[in-house]
Length: 222
Image (tube, rainbow, N blue to C red):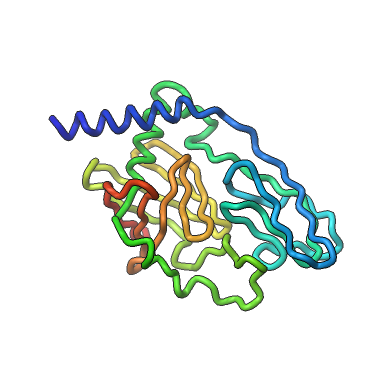
């Protein structure tokens, strides 16, 4: 009984937070490198970034002459382009910001929390092998072990969690019928407003939610 009350309380709190979160439009950013110099273009919100249109004669190559992280978008080597920062939404069609869908999305995000591990051990020693990465490093790079379909089980809540991670870093999550979207960047998984550190574990990985290490889940390759 106490466990059910605790679960409902957790879901209600997270759900209410999602209801109060406004739906924001994708952000358009133009970033230009002059005289082959590095430039960081700050963004108002953190989200998945894609190149929309190139203006420079020099090719803009992700990981070499442009990339992004939590601080913003950087360009180098005379790369000049327009970028789109996709907003961090929780479920299909932004429907999760109202009523029961908000609560369901909140529960799903809570279920994605994982094994409590030390962030100091999250070194990803085999992440980068390309010597030509850009000025700030190839933060959007995903190693092969992080790409594919994965499954996990949350023992505390008794729920299955399925993840699909693409080579571009896009993430699709399914928690017992509730679908969410997110992305991986700089060794971190972002789902809605939640952020998770990723650490390789065998053929899969563990994640730990930034600010909440109470739920335990291990993801293995499907």
